[in-house]
Structure formats: structure tokens, C-alpha cells
Length: 502
Image (tube, rainbow, N blue to C red; front, top):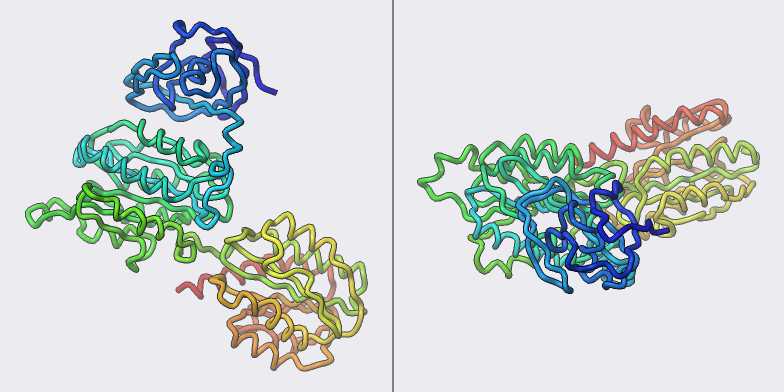
């Protein structure tokens, strides 16, 4: 229910990051105090700002208000009968929208093939100057427009590097290209030294947080614009960003001439700051003029998820299939304990359409795919399906089950960039050979963890497990002993994943 406010309720009177309010009708336009355009100083009248922006008319109506950080240079613009005023600086800001705007398809979806959380770290130093600063903003605006910003596409925010870094707006503040473009336009030039390293570290630590709008399982990207060269060390900041799982792109503009090289702390600053020194994460433009032709190639890089190596972790870049023994010797109550074991492993990972994938096969003499890697892409759905797996009962043919899983579960995702893992849980001896099918799985690049309970032969477990056997084969006498093995499996997956990335 919207909060009823008066004509003169100010943004600073609403102490929430997001709130729905109801403006009354008949407010006198000439008495409104409004500072700014699109982004308003928090001392402004909410209803006045809403009329100024065209969200409501003089008749009033519902308005959604979003709180924003403070800024400089609030502009004076006449719109919809309201003359806003200039303000050099204020400690907090807000913007207003209508719920009806959410019906716009572009705002609702965006480019689903380019899911990324992107921070543009722009150069606001005296080195770039006001004129090139504006050209830089124009270029960033063109990139943002081509990305296809939307709730289900890329989200963007902006940080300005200067004497002291400043977050201009967060990922959660705007979900349409139109609003982002206006927000970029409103960013004022700060001046001072660029201190790019300081700003990059600040962005990695303070910008990419859940409260700021970061989404789980989505690549985190910072695009750093450097005019000439940085005024401080950015190598350490690049290390910090990588530790936080942030993919650092460097867009360098205008290289230092020979006479200026003595002022550059490290001529290899680009190679030392980017996510990986492989050419993909570095981008150069000769100057800020005629940059339109550089927009599309940069956007293509930002939308190439499989190259975002610094976002890849053992929690979001693995395919894990569970091969679950459903034979008669297990029993229904113990089968539930096996499913709980599977759930406790699965819920640790960042499951999404571009993140970790989970599949499950139950076997006796026969095999049944409970769900494949492509069936579900949320953790909630996966855990619900695991809970509802029906116990089959029957014999034990583990070798056939391994072959079935390799062929029917891993086969369709053979081109996936994720690393493949198979976790086998069984309570007895297989009636068929397990060594050959397990070797074939290893040859296909699948790492196997074998978990035996009760009567499962240790020789079978070792034959199925990947090397080194002692860290991939586990055994417990009782089904209640599965729980302590959960952490061993998770650590093993992360260990093997990290080794595969080296």
C-alpha cells in the first residue's frame, strides 16, 4: 500500500531505499522546491520531482522513489510546468518512477544472452579534463545502450575515479537503458588525481555487494577507463578484484609518448591489472574522438560469459551428477538419508542457467534419469525435485549405470565450459564390472567421487574413483555416517576445479 504524503514531503523524509508513495492532487507547482533532473537532491519535493519527470500529473497519483548516493552539479531544467533549480552538491539523492514503467518489455527483460553485473569505472581526474570527460561519458552511454540493460539482462552501475573514488549509482538503481543514460549524463566532473588503483579496490570491495544489487551466479565485471596512465599502483587492486571474483577489463585511451614514460609508475600496468593477461581483457582506443566503432567490439567482450575466468569458481562453474543406488538392500528410510546427503552437497553450489548444473540418476539393474543438467536452473527447484525422488528397489548394476550416465547425462553437455563431476553413492557390490565404465568416464574428463555404505566393497570404490584414490573414495558403515562426508566431497570438488584451472 503506498504511503500517503503531502505536496511538500521531501526525499530525505522517506528513510527507505525503495518506497511506494501517494502524491495528492492539486499541489501548487510554483511552490515546489526541486533540485536536479532525473536524479534529484533529497531536499527536493517528491511530488514536485514526480511531476517534473512526468511520472504523474498535477492530479497526483502513486510514485515509486529510489534513494541514491549524494552527488555534485544538480542541473536546472524546466519540464512539465516545474522549473528545477541548480545545486552544487548534496549528501543524498533520489529518483522517481511509476509502476506502469515496468510493463515496458525492454525494462522487464533486457538482453538475456548478456547477463552480467557491470561497473563502469570512469576517469574523473584533471588529467582527462572536462571536455574528454564528457566524451568518455558519451562512449559509456553508447556501450550501456547496446548492452540491452534489463531485469533479466545486464545491470550496470558507475564509479568515478578521482582524488577519492565515488560510487555514482549502483546496479540496483536503474534497470532500463533510458534511466541509465540519464544518470550517466548527470554525473559531474570531480577532478584531482585519478588514483585508479584506489578506485578499483574500492569498487571490488564496496560496489559488488548483495545490498548493492549483485545477483548470484552472474559474472561480476568492472570496466576501467584510463586516460593516459594511472597515477597510482593498480596491480595490487587487480589482485584484490580477482580475489573478489571480479573480471577486470582495462580500456586504455592514448598511450604515453616517450617523453612521458618517466612519469609512468609501471608501463605494464594493463597486463598486471586485468583478470587474465591473454588479450581478451584489455582494450585500447587511440583517443576519445570517433569512438563509435569501438562500442560493438567492447560489448561483445562484455557479453562473452565463457571468457569471464575471474568469475569462475568451484561453486558456479561445475556440472555435478549424482548416481544414486536404489537397490533393495538400501531400504526406504536409508534411501531418504542418501537423498539428504545429495541435497546437502547440491545446495552449496550457485545453481543458475549460466552457473553450476545438477543432475541425478537412480539405478538398480535399470537406470532412471531423475533430472538432467538442463531441466532445472534454480536451487529451490533442484532441492524440491531431490526430496520427491521415488525409491525404485531392485538389484545393483553400477557399471551399466555409470555408462548410462556418461552417455545420457554428460553427453548432451559435452561442450559445456563447466568441469564435470560424478558422485556415486552405493551400499553394496555391483553385479557387473565397474572398472571399464569408470575408466571410460575418466577418459571423457569426468572426475568421479565414490561413496560406499555398509556392504560396498572398497575395491569397487577405488576402481570407480578418480586419482588419487584416497581423496576420491569414501566409506562409512552406517547411512548416518554420510553427513560428515558432505564437506569432504565439496572440498574435493573445489580442489579438483582449482587444479584444472592452473
